Image (cartoon, rainbow, N blue to C red):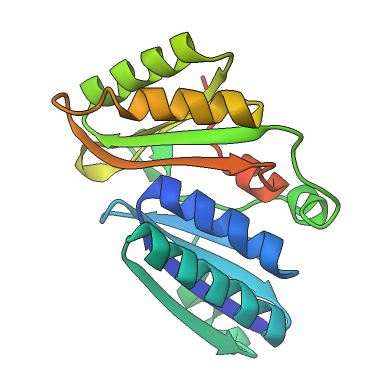
Length: 207
């Protein structure tokens, strides 16, 4: 491992947007992502030092543009003996009924350099269930989109993920987020055109 890049972003949906941008900026691999109790995510990427620097810088700039809290660091030639400290093991949080540590398989790392998905992904993240349920109902009534999954974090944060063509997803997200006011707090609303395979691999699976 030539370099380890660390970027901790507040909010799950902003984290996915940042990850997508980092992978599209430079040839880095997503090593792991860990959710934290502050309603955010720590992403760990690996690659050459130059690629990791470029990816982390792109992610930091995007997080600043979205006005979300972001902490970054780059560790050149990480010491192998420290791996147990920064590599998360299997961990399940019963409060949010989800895994805390996500490690993409090799097939996703290979796919990130081969291409991207031929559709867009939209994310609407709120604090409060009522708001996001109303938002997603409105989104689905507005455009031809499909609900892929939902992600829960601590503090009442919940994200619903939709897919479709770019125009449909944009229209659905805009309509959905407009319904949040008065029902809860809008945390984020984003559209990712042609998301990378690694981003898709991190979407929670529907039961």
